[in-house]
Structure formats: C-alpha cells, structure tokens
Image (cartoon, rainbow, N blue to C red; front, side, top):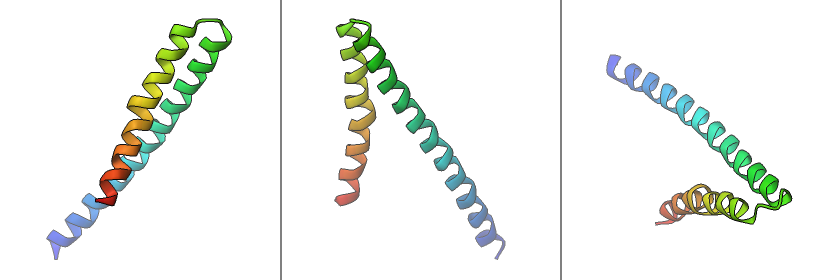
Length: 72
C-alpha cells in the first residue's frame, strides 16, 4: 500500500510540474507574438519574420507534433 501512496504522490507532483510548464509555454508564446508585432510595427521585417518563424516552427510546430502523436 505504501508503494501505491508513493506513486499517487509522484503523480500529483508530476501533474503540478506539467501545469507550471504549460503556463510558462503559453507565456513564451505570447511573448513571441508580442515581439513579432513589435518588430513588424517598427519596420524590422527580418526580425518580425524571425519571431514568427520561431513561433510557427518551435512553438506551434511542437504543439501540432504532440497532437499528431496522440492520434496515433
């Protein structure tokens, strides 16, 4: 029974870590979008595109990759 209680606690801790990581990931996505918008409005198309590329490839791309993995 102690093993089960230990695993329940392990699961609780892991869920809390994943929730914190998810919040951090969303905040980072928001920052990328803000930077892309800032650079576009400032007339810096290369930097705007760089921020957009990072958002699409690393941020959104990973989300799509994970979703695709859940289907299979």
